[in-house]
Length: 174
Figure: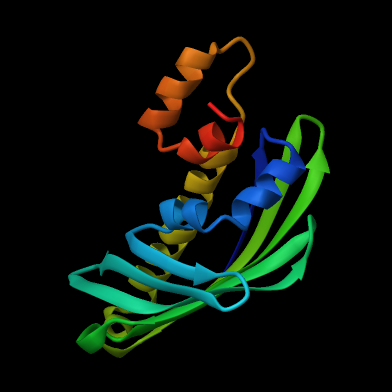
């Protein structure tokens, strides 16, 4: 199954690019991510807990960033094993384009599952995969968007803590 979407992010392209390469931002954005360790060069080991329909599983696996064209595009791919629940793997080709007021992020994502999870049927799995991709990129957008014009730094810090925008706070030195 393939998913395609775009997001208009109110942040400078360099800020968005730096965020997609930051493992802390990735960890915060991956739904159900309990840990993410490693590096861009060697890949990240991840532990992700998810519930798909009636099946709950903790997946352990690898997340890699590849095909990196600095400031322009990259590929995020991952695969994990969830014991008796089965396996999941997928990826997203992500591109970044400067636009007035920020950055347009476009992605094409693909997901595949096997084992017990695959027995749930394609409608449930497709809906779940779409939800996961949307949640990841929504969290990413929330993590990197600049505060609204007129918002005071105290409001930005409060909003940052409330919405887990700690990455942006660290970036601006707040």
